[in-house]
Length: 193
Image (cartoon, rainbow, N blue to C red; front, side, top):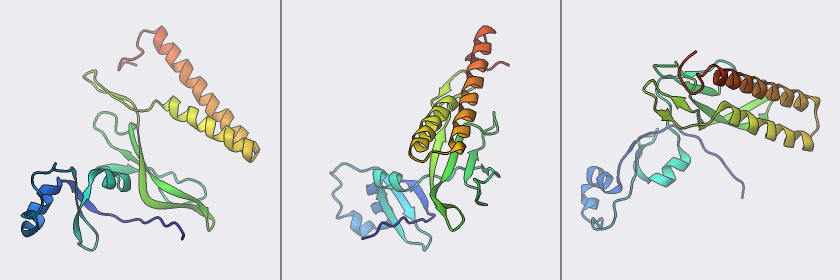
C-alpha cells in the first residue's frame, strides 16, 4: 500500500461528545451512556456539509486553527511562487510572535510544493503588564537550523550549506552582542529601548 496525505478545510468548534449527541441526534443521545465520562472533542462540519464529532486528540493531530486576522508574508521560498507563511497580527507589535507555515512536500515539478496542513511556531512574548507568554527564542530556532544544515552538509556537501551556516552563525553573534549591550545598559528583560 502507498501513503497518502489529504488536505481539506473544515469548520469546527470545541464541543463535548454528549453535547454533540444531544444537539445533533436527540434520539441517539437517549441511548448514549450518560454515566460515562464525557469526552472533550470538536463538532466538525466538512466542505460538503457533512456534520460529525471528533475526539480532541484525533482532531488536534489532524487540524490546526487558521489564525484570525493573519497576514500572508509575501516572500515565497525559492523556487516557488506560493506564499506559505502567515503571521498572526497583534495590537501591540503588529505580529512577530506567532507564525503558521504550510507544510512542504519538497521539490517537485520545478518548485517547492505545499499542502494545506500547517505547523505553528510561537515566540516568547513579554506583555505590557510584564506577564510572559512562553515560546521559542529566535536563537533556539537558529541553533536548530545550524544543526540541521551541518547534518545535511555532512550527507550532501555543498558550498551553499557552508554559506548558510556562516550566515546563521553571524545572526547568533549579533543576538549575543545585542543581549550584552542590553545587560550593560540595565534594560535586558524590560520593554525599553
